[in-house]
Image (cartoon, rainbow over all chains, first blue to last red; front, side, top):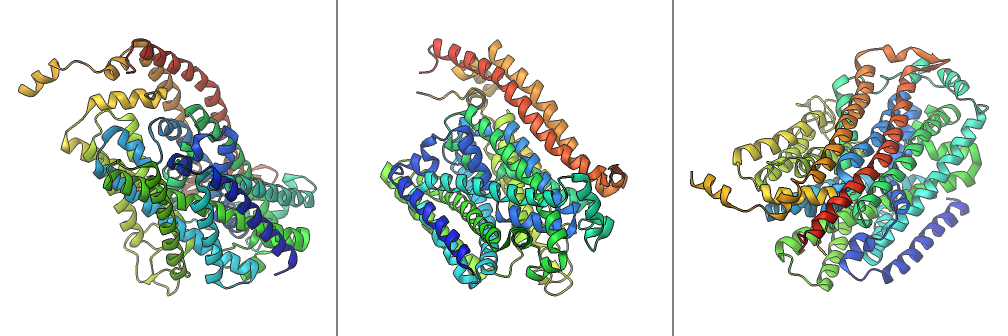
Length: 510
Length: 113
């Protein structure tokens, strides 16, 4: 660990703590805690969405994947971006118009049933826990490598930081940590990409020509099919990526931080540009790492390729650039896990405690207290789980989170907004069938069972052939919602008229 | 039989009335005319990529120098996303105007209470 990296690391810690200090003064009510008072502008929320979304898996994972498998690594970049069209066209505006703090609020604008709220909270919590373990385990492993400290200490540092932001600064602190992280991440990525491109004389055609011979894969590096050989598995993965984003609780929650649907819309536009430019640049990170670091060295540092970007930074800009990139990776992790804590806490404190147990009869002070206890609880639970899950495969946890989000949350969102006949039983069966089918199919998939020892959690033959079950579980979520509705037969058209009007106009009672 | 009779008797709520107005229907129509074809298009465009790379080798053919069609199609996904977002941002100001009109009508009629 050199001095530069320590200084940059402390700078990030200090500046985020200062933000938290000022944010704490503005975090008195539940509304301020969960939504930063709903006063973010379009570009602010757009940057915050990017900061919330671009995890270490994106920054380090995709760069490594492209470096090691060429074109196939780029699939993630495409799926993660196109997903924002689903968010923009279907989810963002109605969500803003109908909801208050959580996804369950939005669904309950139509049903007002405790059971629906409970199941929505359950699916939110499940997604948050899987995503959180993935982030923390990844963070621990990464910080261990970057700063040369023990795994448990790394997890603890990240865990304590995220707890402080959320506990004291709520959504205001979380948003600004995410905004700063997005700016830093973009800066680091642009600088590295620029240097990589300069090494190819600023000629993209030359870069591709050189890449043909730069890696052990030869020409195949530029062709699809190096990593994904099973067609259905590839399509299933792409399904999870494009449909999952619109159901991720921490992303959905960001739309409550703006004042109306127009601002929600413009924040997606900003996010699409920032996230899109970032994902295009992952090509340069990946190609650069493959060409100038070499796959042998990348794999040696970390089998999954997670160290590709930091190693590339070292080759291109020495210890300083490497330290900067490491610090950015640290900030990246902090921003994502804080958003996750907040969305997990909102499901516990607002949905389960405030609305189900207390039936909405809860004072402002109690709401804030509940939110803080829940944040603390979610943070401690995730840290404990992460400490025990050190050897879990991170990529599988992330893809599982996306898969549940697409299977359990997206169908119910779509039906709530667009389907007149949809009812309470349908909402519950949509979420439960999506959630359980995703969980069951993954637990019997090759990610969990592998004939070779050490390749998965258990040794054995997988019963379900696909590593990502989205292609089956998303349709099952929709089917569950359809059957639940049709078989139970009760429908409240009057309530739907109200929801339709509010969702499309943003009308709210004064 | 009893149920059906009761339904007819119930007076329509303010929300049922407002969604049956011409303005609101026009808003829904315009949104549908834009969003449905766009959503179908981008999903087809998106899934065409993994389907073509998985089942055919068509995209392995070089397009410009050593850049093959797979990369061109991949970059086209980005262009497609940004284009659709830009078009939607323009279109949506029309939706906003209609929505504002409908809301105004709703408030004027005193239905907002």
